[in-house]
Amino acid sequence: MAISAISCWELGQLVKRQRVELSLPLHEWVCTALEGDIQVFPIDRAIALKASQLPEHHRDPADRIIIATALVHDTQLMSFDSAFPSYTELGDRLLSS
Image 1 (cartoon, one colour):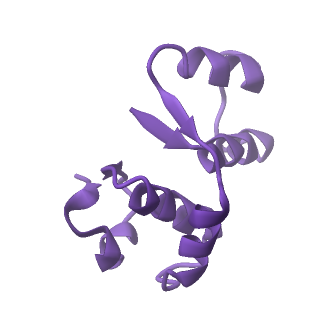
Image 2 (image 1 turned 90 degrees about the vertical axis):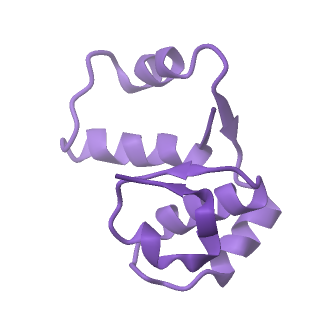
């Protein structure tokens, strides 16, 4: 399993805006949550370029980075975001409800 590094940033933003409350300080919570076999994919040049080429089905650039991460790493993506199915580039990579 893996997540995009931008997901850590997004969680930090949610905590800062008090939209999410964690049982531990952010850094501790993230470190605990990512223990084990969970890999964090960094945002590299290939991901940044792929994200810049994706259509803007919604305005969240972080979500396009998450989608680009799945495409570059040729992995499946789990999301309940209603805009993600609009990204036909994901093909059968998208796992959703």
